[in-house]
Image (cartoon, rainbow, N blue to C red; front, side, top):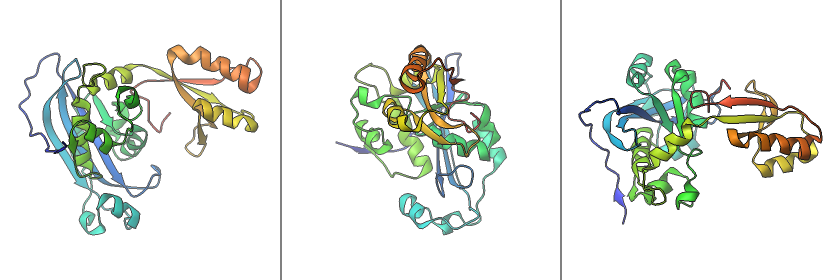
Length: 276
């Protein structure tokens, strides 16, 4: 039986050397292009957690609307319920956002590859924070979940909520990450933090033969069109331990030579950013 999600009330922090502070973040936007589309709603939940990845309590919430320079597309209103009237006259207070985030050591979003790029464009405070992604940095399938969508994961944790409103989605993510995974006996947050701390290597298959694109896609490579200043190329992110194997694959299956592909080392501070 599912229970309606009720947001946790703020608690009184106890402090201590083992207590860390994080931010759950969610945004609603006018579209998918972080360079041109606009944020219309920002939601954040500040929380404390232990070294073992157990959520200790909520320290506060932040919710704000922003009126975009163009009318909100009808399809966005249909998804989010946010209308032009709701955001009229509203704007983000950059200083208030920075003050709320100031003492957090990590920002978590349910698709950081999307949220981080928008957030950095609006608020520089997010450029130098560690980020984690609860979609890509937890293998939910390996822990009994058939889907990584927020609503599905929340149902698996025993709750339902009003989706596609920023701060509500943050409260939902908090409960999902506090859920004890039956496969590990630890909260999902512990697994997420462990994976976020691990460096990953981004391998670029630049100037790879067009006729081998299906081989790259099958292996998990993604296409970048070059419009963001990064290479016009296929690329893949792998663990450090898998780097040699990935280079061997490119040399033997794609280039048929001892090519030295371009490789970037990514950490929680650079991963998901538009700057890399």
